[in-house]
Structures are given as C-alpha cells and as structure tokens.
Length: 272
Image (tube, rainbow, N blue to C red; front, side, top):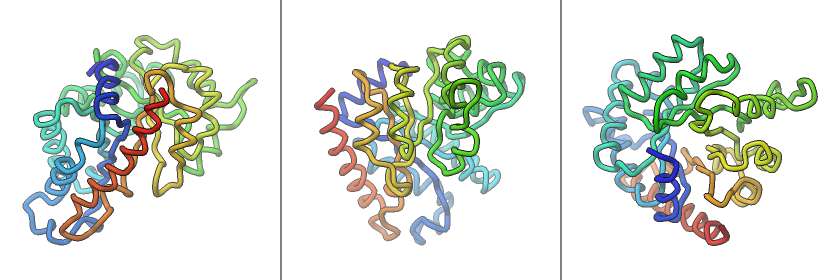
C-alpha cells in the first residue's frame, strides 16, 4: 500500500482510526470459547462490524505469540481475512522488533512476505543496520518507536544526549537512513504536547498514536499538535473498542464505539 492510497482512504472514510486487535481469551465473550478458533472468531466479528469506521487494524503480536502455535495460526487467518475481504485496510504488525541486520531481514520477511502486513513496528536502539532491512521493502512501512505512551518512556527517551532529547536525536538520525521515506513513527497520545517539536523534525511523516482511550490520551490535543495537511495521523484505540461489551452484542458495541470516534475524527478533518 502507498501513502497516497492511505490518505485517500482517510478522506473517503472521514476517519484516521486504527483499531488494535489485542485479543485476550480472558476478556472475550464466553460463548466464543466454544469456537474451534476463538481468537479468529472474535477478530472476524470485530472486523466485520467496524471496518467502515477505521482505516487500519493493528494486531499486537504478543497477544498471539502467548498462545503458541494456535495463536500464530489465528494471526495468519486474521491477516489473510483482512487482505482478502478488506484490502483497502492498512495493516500494522505491532511486533516491536529490532536486531542485527540479518535477523532483522528475517523479521521483515516474516511480516511483509509471509504474513503480508503493510507495516511493522520496530525498535530503533540498535541503529540503522537493524532498521534498514525493513525499509528495503517497496510499499511497506516501518513504524519506528520514537516517543511511547508508557510511563517508562521518561527513563530514557526524554533524557538529554548532547544538546537534545534522545527521542529527537533518534528521529533526526533516522531521516538519513536508506529508504527513510518508508518510515512512520510511534508517538504516544499521552505525550501530545511533544508533537509540536516532533513536527518540526518530521513535518510530513505519518505518526501512529496509541494511548487514546483507556490510557488517557486526548484526541483533540493530538490533532492540535500533530495533524498535517495530509492528516499524518493514525490514532489507535484497542481495549475501549474491542472490549466495549463482553456479551453476545460485543461486535455491535465495538461498532458503536468505533463510530463515535470516527464521528469525532470527521470534525477534525473538516479543519484540514
């Protein structure tokens, strides 16, 4: 998928919502546990009910790896279902990978070739040779962890190195890497006021912004400081949508929650 196509989908759907598919078997409706593949059954219902209100889905890979081979098969079925039935949707493997070059090449093949995701999240702290293997794939995007939404982000990411904060140094340096035009960046919604400085470094790049909803991030603040002429934002919400209900109406409840967020987003898009 190209960035222009993603922008067109945002304008068409009047939404820049990304829905996180973080499936915990302890939280899904009990009747689904009788299914042969409860994880896929849950995902399929959520996707079918919410796809009109979002432009992206983001499975958190840990929630599938935790269930071993069965979880991995559920992930394969989920991404195949999305690519077959809703090819206009941008898909994100929230894997947070990052290792030496040859290992990163294998990670990239796993998510871009085997599973056919459009993008993958990557940790940058081993430097460019751990990231450039991901960037080598045409029309695939590497989403670099820049400034995350968790409290621990302040342990390292905002500390000063030389004359600037570490996260700013990471973002600035990443612009020099081969195929840097394939980069997007993770910036947590709980760090919305930092977006003004980030936009000075990467004024046009897409940002994946988790933390709106259960983590307390504010959509209005994110849009105020982070939105660009081409929107440039993918706002992720996971638990607030997919676990809106634990009853038989879980998919419908998720759709209503997604629709509420989409309506709010459409009002911000009118200002672009």
